[in-house]
Image (cartoon, rainbow, N blue to C red; front, side, top):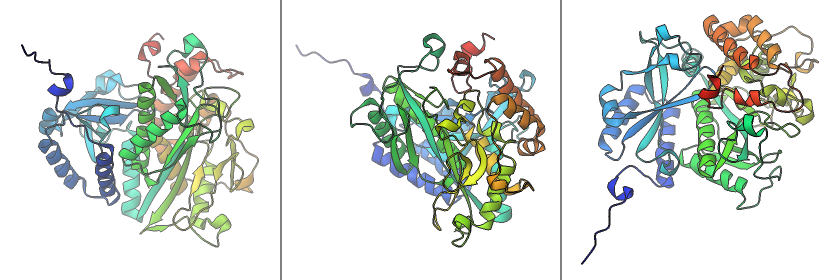
Length: 483
């Protein structure tokens, strides 16, 4: 008698699962369309047709970020989305910093240019990803959606001045043993390294190298166009670099980078952490943000005869950021923990000055050429809202005021060394109101105050449980709600 085997889940399901090489091809094609500024209505028509014609897709994952930079995701069934893509609503009152309950209804508008195919082994089969813009119930851009504000600013720069805003960030993080190491920190009181090597040192096959290799493969498949990856200075620390992009796309990639790292680490039974200084006594993690402005394909920061080969336009950009460095510090270093990183003993960029060689400077002028000339904002922490970082840097660099302080670029000035001083400078600054609008500025400051007030006021010599427990990137609503 012949027995018939029961079908497995894989036999029953026919969901999209593409090879990494095919994913890379699709994502690079979408990236090129974004770079070429293909009109959104044309992209919408193309993407909707693709979704309708591809039966193996079951859902579309929509990504958006809150005021502090936490990434939120929700899945829409494909058949529902095809009928209702212009009327996607959600409850904004459930998201910290968005809306009060009486104004809870918000809408998502899909940014069809920010469309990604993700590897099925990392994101699940049968899904594609797209970023969304947030609108209020009347269909206006929601003021708390910083991605929307950045997108509007970048579009205005391009329309009015012909400026293309370009950016890339070098994002450092730590890999720790065990799942949910941050959420359990208030119980364990310590993070455990997976690797105790150092800069560029990780043997093939060790946990840190396996993690870096896997993340690099996923990034490559998602069109990141990687440049280099390596262990960083501190034990269990990593950095995986990829190429330049248009500013909104660059900020989107930061969110995807951290998401990919967390997904890969979880699958390996570990935790990827972007706390700026999770361990005292070793180097912290930064998010050095490289920026430039181009027009008609010409890099406006390049001048072969300029000081450090940076143009006068580029130096004015630098001077404005130095002028407003303390004003925007809270936007670039948004957590209690990030002020541990601004420690001069660990190559920390805590000095309000510009230099080609001094890595303690907030602004660095890397060696460049006509194509690559840029400035590097070194004082950015990896847990900052990337859209807020880009908005603060570019809007300040292009539209801020310039101090009359003598020797501005080498003056003896320092960034705040604690979040309370940073909040005071942020609240007192007229410029931050122009950057965010007074209402959003107040909401953001209140969120930072709430986190700070739950932590010991003085940082002290070891990482406190509260600065991890109430860190905005540690997804633990239960612990938050105990207060």
